Every structure is written in structure tokens, then in C-alpha cells.
Image 1 (tube, one colour):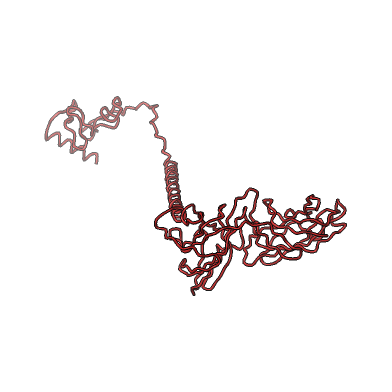
Image 2 (spheres, rainbow, N blue to C red):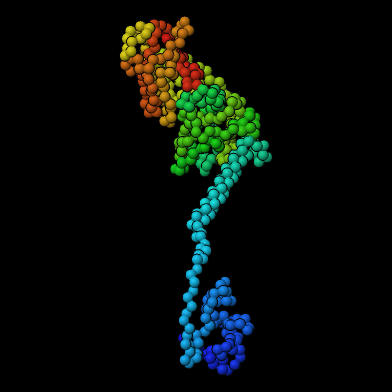
Length: 414
């Protein structure tokens, strides 16, 4: 290919006979594929590194290979090129993987922020709807004539039809027995019953938050929605009712109200289906009789308590410091329909107050069968023995909740 190209160049010189160098070679116009500067050697005939090519103008070079164009021409010996110490600059590799990783992290963070914002927006919308339903004066609220306590009223709810009966309310000083703690807040507890009267076989649950209470005479302002999880057993919130099913239990509200309007709605945006005017009772300390089951009202345990057979003994697993133990049999029996969260009874739940006013705590495991911790079984009765290290045989037995409230008493005559 080099020989053919050279012959074509010689022909071009013969045809046009323009500029020649001292050796008679054409050095004029450059081919279109390798243009040069008029009057200078075309760059097509210069080796890389020659003057005018690239950045190394001082590097000597040879012209075209005249041995291919001039008969008898003796080529000069090639001139050795001095070694160069210049090291070409190498661009550092770009950390593309890391850049993509950082970009991916940023995209993930942005996506997470958007998702959190969307969830917050939905929560706000739901909260606003609930607040509008139970806490605003909106004109869309249709007044409903209050139903007398103890009388059933028929309502359509959740695609079914129910008879709803409200029996009354109690202003509790705090949580129920199983959840009580020192410093707990007052609760309004409503006793009500649901009876599904349509023949449907699908089950419907009447949700706690569809009930609300507000200041007496006003069913739309200052509203407090019902708890969806109640510590008072049995709970009215939760049972799934098919046609013909009936359940009675408690609704609870986190409020100190005693006079209030109770309302039931089919969802947070509906008008009231029924209302009731409540005047809550304040529970008293329950006074028990030895040998008779007792239902305490304060903290309203989901079980009854029976104290029986007071007696004294002179010894036990651990010798009494006073020289005698006062013993009593304890039986706890779960109420019908209660759940599994009934709490427990332990030795600290009982105190004996002697006639002189001294308080004697129940001993842990002082005698055979002695009470330590008794878990309340929702399906059957449980029992233990209360033991008090005292020579007194007459006084008052007190039962106290975890908040320290006395909820029941029994007079003991040894």
C-alpha cells in the first residue's frame, strides 16, 4: 500500500509540477484528508512528533520515503531518538461505584422522607376526621333524642342491626385492677349491652372509638372517644357478633367527667345513632362477708374474692416472730366473659389491721399453701392461704390494688 501511495504522489508531481524541494519532491498542497499550511510540508507526509504535529515541534523527523520514488537512492541511517524522562500524566480512576452508592443513598433518604411525610399526612387526616366527628360543633351533626338508661334502642351499625342498652356509668379513680399504678388517671366506665337482631352470619365488631362522651347536654363538643383496649373486664370493645349474639361489658373513657352525654356513631364522620345522658356513680369500698364471694367496685377486678375460715396456728414453714399466725383461706373466681388479662394477686395485696390500728402485712409462703403470687385463671377459680404474723385474732382485712387504694374489707372475728 505504501508503494502505491508513493507512485500516486509522483504522478501528481508530474501533472502539476508545482513547489518542489531540493530533492525535486513535491511539497505543495496537502491532500484533503491531511491538510497543511500552504508553503510548508503537508502534515500527511510528516511522522508523528514532527514540527506542526502534536505538541513536540522540536522533534526531528524524516520526509517521505524517497527510496520508493528515486531510482538508486541511498537511504540515510535512521537517527536515534534520545530517551525521554517525561512520564505522561495518568488521570486517576473515577470512583463510579462509590458515586453511584452515594447517589443511591441520597435517593433512598429522599424516598423515606416522602413516605414519612405521606404517613404523617394520612394520620393527620384521620385525626382531623375523628376530631370533627366527636369534638366540633359542625352543623351536620343531627341531634338525637336521648334514650333512657336501661331501655334498648335499635340502631343500624356496620351493615347489621343492633339493640343497644346502656345501664349506667361509674367514675373510677384510676385504671382497673390489672393495670392500676400509683398516679394513674380517672376513668369513666360505662356498663352497656349489645344484641344483634338481624339474621346475618357474618360477624360485626362495634369499635370502641365509635363511642364518645362529652359534657352533659352536648354530644358534639369536648368529646372523648372510647378506648379500643380496656383494662376493665369484660370489655364491650372487641367481641365479633353474628346474628342473635349478645354481649354485655364495659366501655372506658380517659376522662374525669361524671355527668356526660354518651353517643354511638357508625364511623367517625357519621351523625350519632343514639345518645344517653349519664350521671356516673362513685364506687365505694366493698364490704365483704366471710364465706361469701365479693365483687370489689373500685378498680373493678374481673373476678370475685372469697375470704373464709379465719383461724390461728402456732407454727409454720417459718416460725412466726409473734408466736402465732392468723390464717384465712382465699379464693378468686373469674367473672363470666372476661379475657385473659386479669392480672395477679400477691401477698402485698392484703393487709390485716388489728383493733389497735396496727397494720400487719401478709407473709410470703410462711405456711403450706401460703400466698406468694397467684395468677388469675380466666377459666377456673384459684386459691391460697393468707398468713399474718400476729397474735391478734380480731380486726379488719383489707384488699388493696397496686395504686395503694383499699378496694374491699372484711371484718374478722377470731
